[in-house]
Length: 344
Ligand code: ASP
Image 1 (cartoon, rainbow, N blue to C red):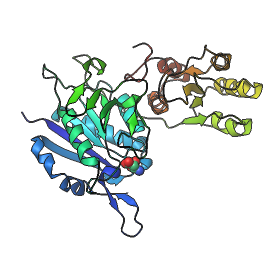
Image 2: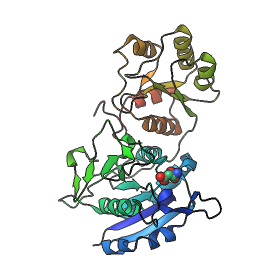
Image 3: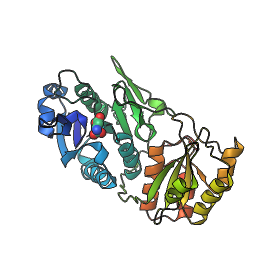
Image 4: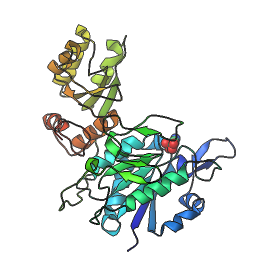
């Protein structure tokens, strides 16, 4: 049986062409993209596609688009062996994180990819990335099960767990990295999977998608010299239910009274404040320094080693399910889809 793969085209550089008037890259049609990769037919797969109309630059992605993509996958779930989502690189890690939470019970590959240069240019990385993503989506284990049974980003030479990855370069063909979880596969002459690192959902798991996302979540970035005037509106924004606080090092923050009082006030006001380090590698250890301990005592929740992308979309997802602040606080401490190391 030919592998049946559904391509979900959302836009991004991979399918862009130059606007003749401005010279800027703009998203273009799926047909144009496919015409430029004739060798795709040599894979011998049964391919079909769906698309977001019109295709967009991923800077325009929002939770409504995530739900649209998740629904496209869920609606076609039984008819395909795997899914390849073509997406701009800029917010690919957010979409991958969001999909990993929305697609509860996923046991088939959902592989996001894109490129730094558009397919159709003389020199580009899109063709390689697309073909590799399709091969990964079609890959099987020795027993015939899907090799990848989770949301992943395939880009350049590596396959990353989607909710562990971040965009690290705007120019390098290896645009993504994941510092707290090793690559799921390395793509060189062969595609070499690290099977012990791949998610293995229960054999009887069934897809039960949860599309709702609550966007009443914000991100506040600390820096030396930050003032109460700058931080207060972010932490106490009316209507906001949660804030991802981007802290220093192992989850540290100033111990000045105005700061700890402000954070405590936000927590008392019912906001879930989650501590996520600004460091791309490592995570929050609030008890290690007095400067982190003060946050814990103020009621801030540790984001452990989650990326900001994962913490933000997990909060949107949990509040989207109608959970209370106390329930969200408890759920943030447990992995939902392999996004954090603790408890694994
Ligand atoms: N701005 C583009 C996007 O994210 C960048 C890319 O695809 O590499 O849609």
